[in-house]
Length: 400
Image 1: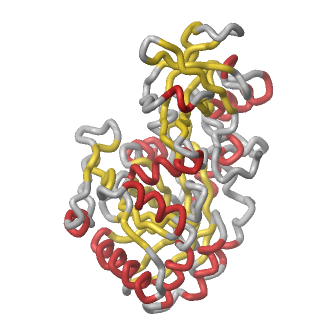
Image 2: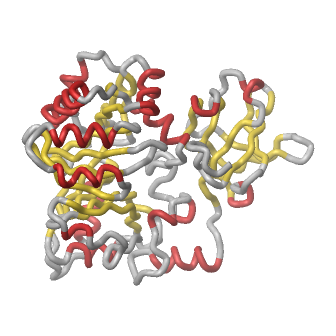
């Protein structure tokens, strides 16, 4: 699906570099950087940044049977779940991540559900939104559920950084109401319906960079007004904020151990391969599509491959080397020699928080996706060695 951001005219004044997001035809144009990547990243870590996100799609679900239906379909528990009662308060809701699988237990889409009083909004990769609606609708019979692909009607703006909650609270307080919902900005996995610049905005607290993250869903026609209101609120509240592109977010999310659908895993993957089972899958709920395969793999075995993190052992020796997506990962023997291929890189970055060291995610054979396992990359006729981490997270360093 081709999308043009409603903010592109405003953002063009900063002369950004663009990249094509995803494998769609054509790919969605997304801002890569505004030419000052170091400052964009620093603002994300120290204050706040605004990120335009035309690569995100939205599915809207309505009807009295919505939660019960989705609970039967998706991997996550949605009825009787923690926070399920929060939506009873006007304007307040709760959020959760889940997978939508096919009958073979493979991932159709990675979902973020925002459960509000009268509807559920589902954030999804823009290229998967249509398939999610079509495939879910095929399981509807007499249920009171309406599913709509709202991708062309609404737009997503991201606010990332430690000052993000304060910025949103200021933007809401400076407009026409919604102050009672601003407490949701301080707690992850809560969402709130507020008004900014006179427009309805759904704010979802979703931390993916190691800093507070707030995802704003607005009508396409309101996106420019809301963006301008956020800038104005920052100025009035003495909050440093600047626009940032995909590149700054990508660095931060890799440091924070956040894998992405269609980049680090895809429609040929199963949940156990992603490291996301704890956040996306309920292992004690009733049946859902693909549940038998998920349960069997969890209880009786393991996948053939699994996503893992790699950190180079000798950063200085690596020089400017940074593996790109698809770079082959090889086993390293006890003598330090290169062995057979054991996987491939899915994402990588030079990490500012780790002193400029290269870190990456890679899909590895199960035998090598284990803590302290030694692997390597062929480079300039030699071998650069690295160490595997089962946990993807590098920052914040709360695990030693």
